Structure formats: structure tokens, C-alpha cells
Length: 35
Image (cartoon, rainbow, N blue to C red; front, side, top):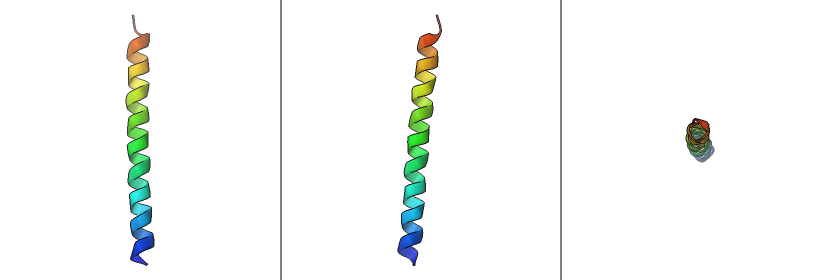
């Protein structure tokens, strides 16, 4: 039982990391677009 909960927790952490990276990349693209 706890294994399923742990897997969900780690998967959620991975998704958060990916979202953070996407945000950073988006910010970089925006800064590059600025003159």
C-alpha cells in the first residue's frame, strides 16, 4: 500500500521538476525576445 503512495509522491515530484524547467525555459525565451 505505501509503495503505491510513494510512487505517486515521486511521480508528483518529477512533474513539478518538469514544470519548473519548462517555466525556466519559457522565461529564457521571453528574455531573448526582449530587445
